[in-house]
Structures are given as structure tokens and as C-alpha cells.
Image 1 (cartoon, helix red, strand yellow):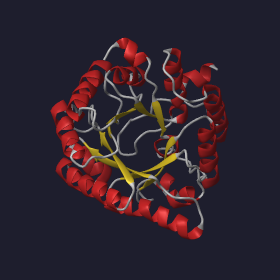
Image 2: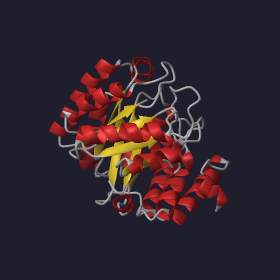
Image 3: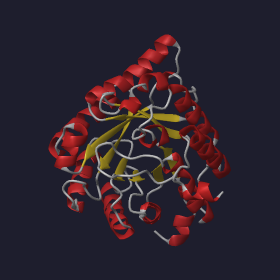
Image 4: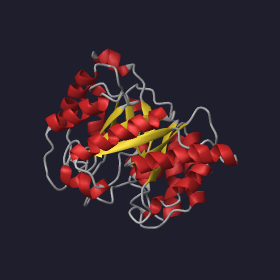
Length: 312
């Protein structure tokens, strides 16, 4: 890929603020405020949003109102709503939002199942009660089930750049998982740096190898956390390796309840600033995103981590 070609390719934002951004917040955010946040995100140009996760409320209390949030989503034909699913029960709940919405006239429900497995036995067991092998088998079933029921499904390989419990994760482990998932033809395959330990050289190498494995047949997506300050550099390295779809969270909110000391996602505002200033189209109104940051920061009574929003 030449630099000239790369500079002409727009990116797609997957706004994960309503799910990943909020799941680690100690104070429960009201359903009304979550929906107001999502409305503002759509207004600033987000067209794919991860709006909820289908997990047990005792595990992640912030997501206890998942179905209520989904029922209140605006019925926009140009927006894709993603629900995080950790197992087949989660996919069934996602499908139920579509059926319930059709029966009750409350929106259309979830459009896409966000399936997840972890590239580490220990972290996988803590996060969703699955070893790598069990995660592969479960995610095969999840993708097949979702597609059979008419729902799109994508998959994220978490802890792809390192595990909080086992340390280094070998690239060969990640690529072997990706090959297994590619056999199910998901809508896309993402690699997630769940604990923010990856560096640009590692990111470029792993995504370049993933691109070779997928051979253009399945799109790639990236998901970075900024725990060690490398998140934005990693996003740029992923872009150079051919990634065009990026997860980011309003204000840089986020963190995983099951990953010790993991901090927020890369900030939507920082990602958009970097890409736009580099001549890469994003379809996001940065000023509106910064205004949404300030609005939600006031709700939380603190400034959000995004550096671009703080500098505005």
C-alpha cells in the first residue's frame, strides 16, 4: 500500500462510548442520559454505535438497562446499532430486542451482534468463563446462530496484544483464532488491545499479518485503550497496516471491569482530530463531538480524558 493511496482512504468510526465507555463508571448513568448521549453522537455523525452489552447485571451493573436503552433508540435507517454478546444467551437477548420492538412499536432493536473471545485462557475465564478453545466453539455457534436468524455478526479478539494475567500473547495465537473465526465469515474481525499494552511496531506487524490472512475477504477493525499512552500512535499504525474501521469512545471514557488497572478507550475527539488533520475523511463533526464531551463531562462532574476536548 502506498502512502498516497492510504491518505485518500476515509475511516469509519464505531462509537463505543455508550457501552465500553460507560461500563466501568461507578455511578449508574440513567437510561434517559444514555439515550441523550446516543442522540448527540448520531448528531455529530456517528453511524455505527455500540449501545449496550448483554451481560448479567450483577457482573456489569451499568448495563442492567440494556433492553430499555435499546427500546428508546431512534429508528434511523442510516445507523447501525451494535450489542455486545459474550455467549449464545447474549445473541438470543439481542434477537429478542428486534422481535420485541416489532411487536411493541419500540424501535427496531439491535442490528449487529458484537461477538467476543479472548486470546488468553486466564483472562477469558475471568471475563466470560471461557478458555480460548471454548471461546472459539462458542463464537462459532454465536455467529452461525445470529446469521441464521437474519442478524449481522462481527467478532472481536480481545487481549490480542497482551494479557493482564499471562503477560505476552503470541501473534500466532491471535492469528490462529482469527483463522478459525474467518471460517464463519463474520462481517468483520477486530483485534482489541484490552489493557493498552501494545506499541505501534507490534500493531503494524499483527494487523499486516491479519490482512494477509484475510486477503481482503473480511474487513479488519481495531480497538485500542490508552492505558500507557500509546493508543493514538497505535491507531495510526493500524491505519498504515490497512485498517479502516476504528473503535473509539467519547471523551476517552472506558475500561474493563475484569482487567486490573485498564483505563479508557482512545478518545473519539482525539482520533478524529488526528485523522482529519492528516487529510483522512471521517464524516464526524469534531466541534459537535467536543460539545458532547463537555455536556457529558458536566453530567459526570469532571473533565473527560480527551486531550483535544480539553484543549478546545
